[in-house]
Length: 119
Image 1: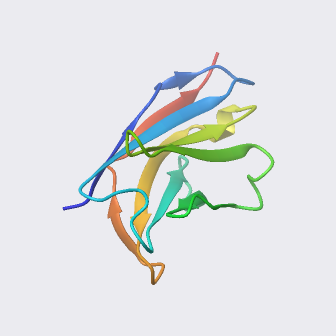
Image 2: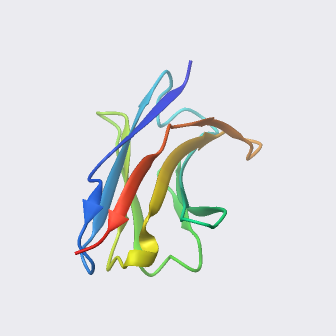
């Protein structure tokens, strides 16, 4: 069974870089057709897709966040990592990692991790 678990700091200072890691079990990051996503939900707002790294290593990002976002992976650890630069308090929220299958449908979600941007 596919499982995902987010990890990272709960508090980040403004202007710094937020890095969150998702550890995947039950399937390889390189399994055919899989996509590995980051989604967030800020207070009072809906879910926002941030970006994905697919099984080939290719990436895609939300246009509104692309200038500040990158996603990398470590296949030896079966982990993928979100980097969000120049954070502001508006980046506060719950961050989720999630898998998608070849149809694009979301398959599994992590439990989410709360990140607060504050000095």
